[in-house]
Image (cartoon, rainbow, N blue to C red):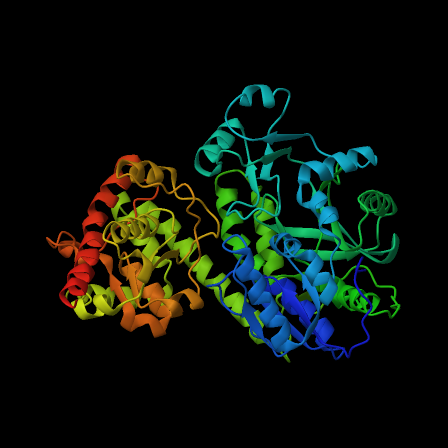
Length: 614
């Protein structure tokens, strides 16, 4: 299970689950904890809600290696030592990539339950997976790899839509995971808004039917445990994760395809090989391999196939006993089933989804709520909190979607565009936002506060426009005045995707001022970054509400950057610096031009006070 690992004779320690998906982490934790194994969990996504469960001994955040590989290593080492971890189970593709950075060290210290990096990289690279499948005689869909708009007509020659598009590298951090495309126009629109130069995307023909997953635990080439499920509902509707699934006896043909492919890759450990199967034609095609625990892992656990327990036993030298299971059990992920309802309804209204199927989806949603034959992926009477929190997030998201659809139809566009981000705050957030608008003009930090600050943090939404420029501009001013050595300047985003470059329009506007943001990489705001800051500058009232929700202890150090503008330019707008994202190059340039004097005022106040005290 763990090639190259030294033998251990020490006492059993804790098992660390690394991942941010409750429907994966919580079932794994229950499975192991019920067998007496202490379990802790960690996430690479600071700022997301912590998972709380009676089966978890602790929950920690790890700084993503996209920001700093060394700090990720330090964080993980600290968790290992704090909880006495002797086993790590990764539950996400990004986690596999992160652990590969110091793989030799981790394998020398503990049981790392994943294949060697050179093996799982073949699975993260979907192109290499498909090449291996074709060589092994496993059927695959027609596929094209897209790297940009150049020569797109040649690349798509002979390709037929509809299709699905997804990142060619599963280990790459991106907000776009999978998208259904009806035609070439939909592809062109998507490329214009999401594709960046140098990124590779995979375009595959859409194979109708159901998703079928073959789950396998391989050890030294032998199949220790196998399981099969069929996706009865997916979220999104056009294809995605399982919202409702059914256990089946393994199809001999699909199982043979899966084992031949995994063995050809030299696989070791758990994997879910995903196929698409058309019941009308009988056609089957490989979609991908999930080389770690998958979203519907609760179903085999409910059927008595305890994959994580068997894997843990093998790692600790105890051969597992694997029982048979009974096909025909249903499971649903309630939050996902709820999330897909408005999407299915909208698709049915637009003619993209059969109305009869949408009605049937609603019927099964109600039936599964009372049927004793359908079990939930998260719900346990003895541990209800994970399911309730997951459902609460889904309800808030569906409520926002419904409001969004209605508001878009009945409100003028400018009103709708202004209200949309506010409604995402939730009911409590909307009340706080309204209250902020009724209060007196927000105060600016006094000169003494600025003078004594040794660390300044700029915060915006995605850390690719406003806060990125503000931090770079202040660093430049400090260098010019000889103060750079004593003050730390950082930037972050409340909803940033770690590692994202500065927006192209921001880079172009910064160059106008002699700044280069080519090396900037976005960072999601976390508790540690907030704790280290003496002064925190946000851009608008939305940020103030989100800061109150996520980091209430920082309220006394948080100010609107617009409050520093020397001619009160932003006073009429509540001292807000609006987000120009998506409004074009000129809007970004205007935003930064208005932001620049605020930063210069900050620098001038600090410099004047410093000189006055010498």
